[in-house]
Amino acid sequence: MKPLGLLYIASVLETEGYKVGLIDCVDPEAGPRSKGTLGEYNCHYIHSDEIEKPFAFRDIPRKFKRFGMTPEEFRSRLRALPRPEVIGVSSMMSYWYPGVAETIEVLKETFPGVPIVLGGIYATLCEEHAKTLGADLVIAGRGEKAMLNLMDDFFDNHADRSGFSDQLDDMPRPAYHHYESPSSACMLTSLGCPYKCTYCASHVLYPEFRLRQVAKVVDEIEWYVRHHGIQDITFYDDALLLASQRHIGAICEGIVERGLKARFHTPNGLHAEMISPTLARKLYAAGFKTIRLGFETSDIERQKDSDNKVSNSGFSRAIRNLYEAGFTPREVMAYVLIGMPGQPAEEVLDSVQFVQDRNVRVSLSQYSPIPGTVEYDKAVRNGFDGSDPLLANKTIYAMRELGMKFEDYERVRRVSKEGNQRIMCNS
Ligand code: B12
Image 1 (cartoon, rainbow, N blue to C red):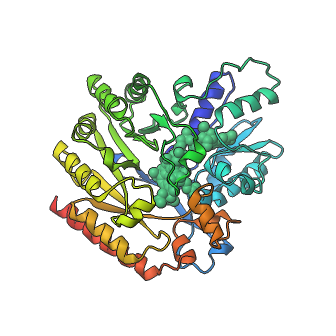
Image 2: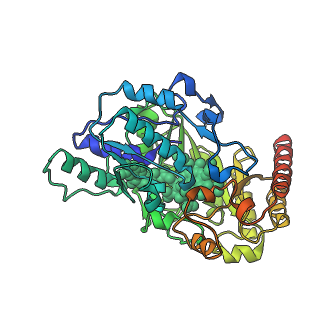
Image 3: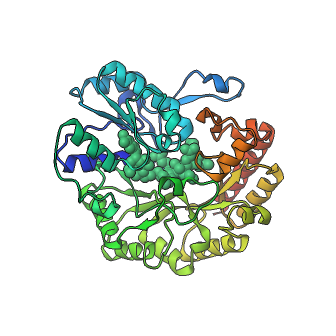
């Protein structure tokens, strides 16, 4: 995980002459007291501390944790910096806002009077709520141009910005130099997604779908590998496989032609229907090591309801193509959704079985409605109280709002884990 939005903003500001410091509060190398443990492929398990549950979760029999830096460590990192003129804070999942609130609190206490600007995904999807966290300004949407304009106003800089473009190919590369020796990077080869699935906020965040130029993407990968010595690269695209022949397929060819040795990962689910035999071979040759497929459910009626993106036969075909290309169950996993409205546990168990029968491990994805989406509005019409984004936390939403039984959830989790273990043992 890397705060890619902040890294783009930092890079734009630096290119225009502003001095920027970055604190990544979930960077596992950030400090001795919040060190994470290293897993496979330079993936870290982030340090966490159990903290008091918010009032809204008082009856939930689960622990509530803060991930990343302790407030003490954050304070000492801040004190080591010169007093900033402006502070920008990013945000991610809407229901992670308590961490954002705490961050702003510490910033205000450490640097009283310094204006704080809050942006990011939570600030975009829940703009009104974000205004209650104590920031001086909330900016919804893309932040590069907005922050540049804001800094220009702040410093009375009259530079001409009429030619500024926030298309990814027109901007400087993300400011990875803020990490001492990054072993991994996250990147985008496109912005947005042309589909408008009723449960997904991608088209709210990025109304337009744009592919980057293949050569520029490969140049960026080369820069990470050769200049930064990065070994693992994760794609954050919403629709990585779209127009695959001229896009990701061509990117893979570029990686191979230039002899770039890195491991590639796709934690954000891929469209299984698009994995042809040729594409599977290209992904394998380029060095993809983590393939996550969005499967959602094997229930045909529900597949139709949720835009028919992947069919059972399409999923089976994708798996065949991947395995024939050389991938093994070690690299491939499918996301199966649990806790959708009206979804019985048996349907999830059938979906788990369907995936595991094809020798693929399952990663259970808990459903929760995302502000700004059709499904969210439907949930509100059906009585969901949208006033506190915490209530859409994916761990509790289905249990509290839809009456899914904790025992059912645990049963599905156990069955899926046992099946995954069997697959790994046999492979
Ligand atoms: C990468 C990603 C992940 C990664 C993790 C990334 C991370 N760093 O934490 C992984 C794969 C692990 C992940 C997991 C999940 N994710 Co996710 N993920 C994304 C994704 C695809 C990209 C985010 C990103 O980095 N974008 C690229 C950067 C450049 O954009 P950005 O951060 O938004 O920054 C821009 C602006 O926001 C703004 N900005 C940012 N910071 C700042 C700061 C200031 C000061 C300003 C002014 C502006 C500003 O400017 C930036 C540049 O333009 C988004 C979808 C999307 N298109 O955004 C979903 C998304 C955030 N995820 C989502 C979901 C649903 C999930 C899961 C819950 C799925 C599931 N059911 O399991 C899990 C949650 C895990 C958990 N523990 O709860 C939802 C949001 C849910 C919510 N309620 O908020 C999204 C929007 C996708 C969707 N389907 O709608 N995710």
